[in-house]
Image (cartoon, rainbow, N blue to C red; front, side, top):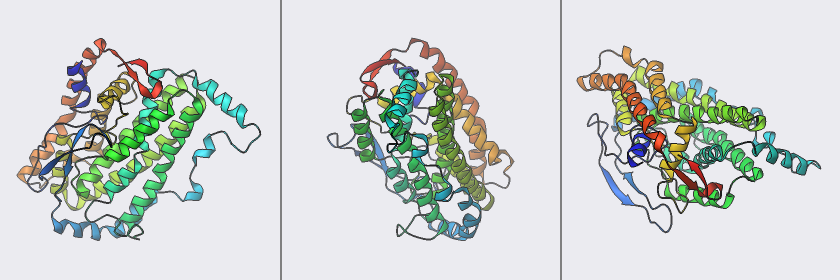
Length: 387
């Protein structure tokens, strides 16, 4: 079991707590780290690394200042006016309606068609979405693009706030649906959310927007895939409303992915050598799940167990991780980069040849998965689910 979990989570799944040590590509992109133990009584019993050094050379800040006009014209267009956005209430029973009780009973009836392993995945996705305060905080640690005043009018700051506002609807909608379904232990879920926000997150992006925008490009596509797959599975079970909910969230994630990938594409245009070094650095460190410190107060290995269920059910898999990497390599035309430094050429070769290696690990993990045990999840009243 231990070896299978390592294959599922350590090398490639973003649904994992990263425990491997840093392997820097270049001194320009590397930094020291300090190990800090999270207080068990307050938050998670896990240990994490807190990055304390700003790895981007100060002169790179001028690049982001020079791109403010470009960001206004090319990034902010991927946001939508509030009046044209969907809201969670569009998909839920209307509490002011006389037919509210009947609508809730209909929703609960449909939710009974969904198996427990599906709810484990849906709850995990929802909890990751509700860790939003941490994600906005991380974006605001990045040199050159942070929202300095919490109301700054730079395009970077506007994007951070408006992206957060759009993402906020995702967790709200899924949380309310799960509450109305009656299929899950909401108190355990609420504890998990509190633990997670209190624990924070360490994506190892080092206050460096190059690293951060590569990370967000990868993660937005990962969430697009994950929500898209929960939509597909809900539809397969005949739960049309939930399929629409998950599909709508996936559509948002896809739009946000487009915005972030455009930023990195522009960085490859204006600073290709440093950007490819940053890309390789993130892939060597491995892309970790935004909720990699997830904890429910009971299961110290919750992230691995959740990852295993998501892998088996096809919600998010090692194959998806490899596919995302190949997509980004093609999207940013990494193989076509020329004029790189020696380190840049090494980084280019690394990211262009990594996906097949990940797929080999996936094949071995699939063989080991046949002997997986069943594990109880507190989110579903301690019912057991096959890993």
